[in-house]
Length: 457
Image 1 (cartoon, one colour):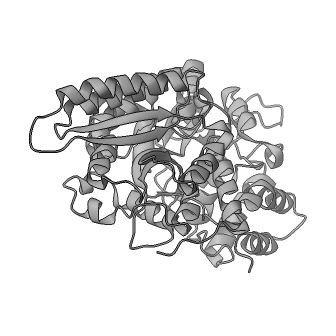
Image 2 (cartoon, rainbow, N blue to C red):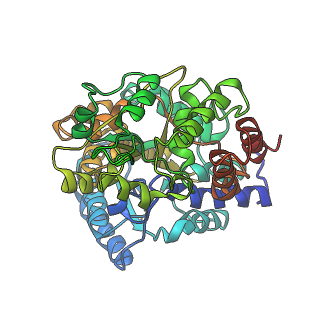
């Protein structure tokens, strides 16, 4: 493939990766719900690298003494905090000691730096960096693919005996990010899947005896949970905590797909009807009147205060929810209507085309995807595994929030990765949707504006 110069369009896509990486969480660090391994590095990054190199050296002396020649793989990663940094070092050490193929991974931690990690890595690789493997965000993929930097993993995955341990949908998302349905440039690692939080006590008070199994039931339950509990004629509990500010496009997408619409055509009849459902919830008083400007902090505060019966987020906030409510909080996967979709946050790995030992590098990334490395990382961070086998473990099956995440894994997806995505997320979507919610523009005009803002047509 011919290398392409860095263009303004490519730079815009890289900027989109910085924004989109943080928006699923709607907040900052890991404790408040970042999407897996993103965040700020610890001041011990260089120490982490030195420690990992030392472990790698020790592992080399213990490697299998078969005919395989010793191979070193240089792995660059970021970590949210010191605990995650140590966890990654432990995983590297275990792989080096147990892979039995004379493969030594040397880990080097770099700061996430608000998303500058991706740009810094791109500049380094264009300058000839010897990094073989890196942790990844899907939104960075087009820029690197256009500059011929990533190895096509398709032939390695196709002959891999654990290919079936990962949902086909996850592979499809990887292909979508690369812009080629025949090639996979990104190796799945761990994800976050949006689900619906709900309060069982409010459901019971509203006369609801089961979680909704269809999109229409979900809409009906929102209405039932909107209640005047003290008889003063004012709403005390709203059925749903709607996020109308920046970042709200992700839970909103589930409504669009629920009516058979999609991001492919936001002006289709299904997409327009999904938007109308969204508007009707606001217009008819089933969501707080502040919804047009409510962001992550507001929807979580409203849910925790008892103002809303349901809202949408992921496992990044589940510990805080349990600390607040104990058993009086649970979750369900966004139910199917004419279609079904929920937003997926992601962290993956890639192998660079410059890697001299791609087979050895694939041993490492597959260990993170389905091996002991997958189990160690997801149990240690609380992120959702992509391995079906790992997800069947007690740690995940005994956690109601994890189970809701796993149920959504087969239909979770991402927004289109385009040079317009950054502006669309930060400005076009919140401004246009706010106008539609308040009746300043029609549903049809809203969706036409969103379509043109994303695709330019």
